[in-house]
Length: 119
Image: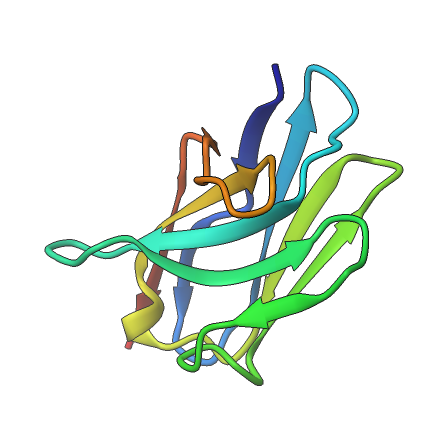
C-alpha cells in the first residue's frame, strides 16, 4: 500500500514562495495520477493541481494558474508543488492525494500540511 507524506508548509507573507513535497513510500508509485488538494476553514476541499504520473500532463485550478507549478520526480517517487506569489486566500491545509486508476476516486491521502499566508 502506498503511503503519502507531505512536507514544506509554513507561515509566509503575501508575495512569498513555498514548495510542498509529497513522498510516496511503501512501494514504487504506479498509479494513474497524483495531485494537490486544499481545504480552507469553512470551505470544501478543492483540487488545486494534478499530474498524470506517467505522461506528465498537468491540470491547474484557475485560481492558481501562472503562480503554482506541479512537478514529479519519478525516480524519487516524489510530487512537488511550487507556489509563487502567494496570496492570503491561498491559506489552507494542503493535501497530497493519489488516484490509482483512471476514472476512480482519489483513494490515497496524505496527512496534510498547513500553509498560512499573511497579508
